[in-house]
Length: 114
Length: 109
Image 1: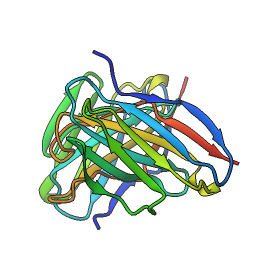
Image 2: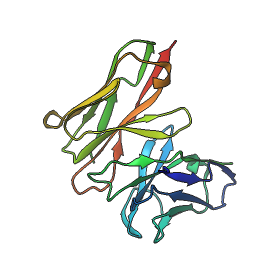
Image 3: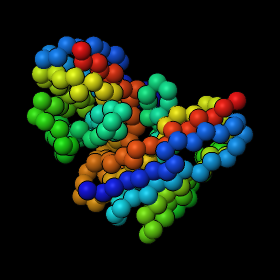
Image 4: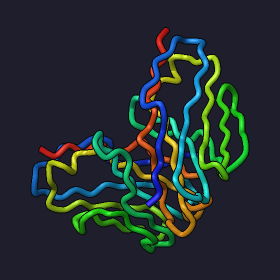
């Protein structure tokens, strides 16, 4: 069956703009979590959604937000982009909540802010 | 919060060599997972291993939860094994994975 699909794969945005990233989980998976990867900070947890509800949120400013739809697809939005938001954004899905379940990652969305 | 430390940070080997990657964590965990990040950025799940030993082909992993560490063994390395290996843990009640900083493995032909 299809894996986790993230779109777009690559994008370049200007400071101050906003961006929306999309993630389609593996069929049947109800949990979607998002991570930011940068060379300096490594992989950091952004948030997790399960059954359309945000279950947990990492230590990121309010400019980072997300949502999950009834078909488990998820989007994350970053408003008022800053140069430091340049990163690889990874989405992962699991059958249920992350705790106690194997998670599977998509290929990521490479965001460059100029 | 929990600290996850991986060692060594970098490892360069010749094809055919064996390697051991280590992951230490500072507190009790619900689960531990190992991932391989390929050159294109995708994280591939290798093992879900909160405790005990598992094997998958040339790869095996052991987690000793009571001593708060996990080991990933790669035997007869191939150039395709190159990349960054991450371990990630989640704590009871935390509902999120905390990643180590990774071990960058380079296998030369």
